[in-house]
Amino acid sequence: MVLVILIGITKIPMEAQIIRVADEYDAIVTKRQYTTHVNISETLKDLIKDAQPDPKFVALDHLAQNSKVGKINKRVLKMLFKVVIDDILYEISCLYEYLDYLKENIKRLELICKYSEKMEEAKTDKKKNYYREGMKMLFQIDENFDNYKQVYEDYKNALKIRKERVDKLYNEIKIIKKLEV
Image: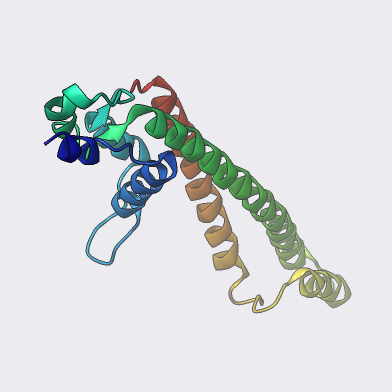
């Protein structure tokens, strides 16, 4: 009987605990075709509910340990929090790069719009042609006189959406930092 108790209380390696928690986290937050994205902080709150203090393995505590089987090690969960925050910060940095790209293109398209206004106000064909050629020089691939206004609106909408995403990600970090395991 003592042999069975000792086998039943062997400590699960920390690496295995980390992989288990990371796998569970990934399974919850990963988009599937039949589910929508779950908020990161809500996912972590669910994991906290299943957390336990660092287990102390003692042969006489066999029955108490069995009640903790399948629970998440709090230390591992705290490590996951750090990894998640680092991942969110990386996503924010990538979004900032994209925001800069969008802003540059919005400025370029605003210049095209100004040239278009000046072209319409121009009195001579020479001036109209001057602004028209300036617009052509500023067009990028697949942009033209027919679609540049729509492209401009698309960039402005993309900028607004990405800024909102950055705000939501910063809010997620605030929530995660307040979570207690």
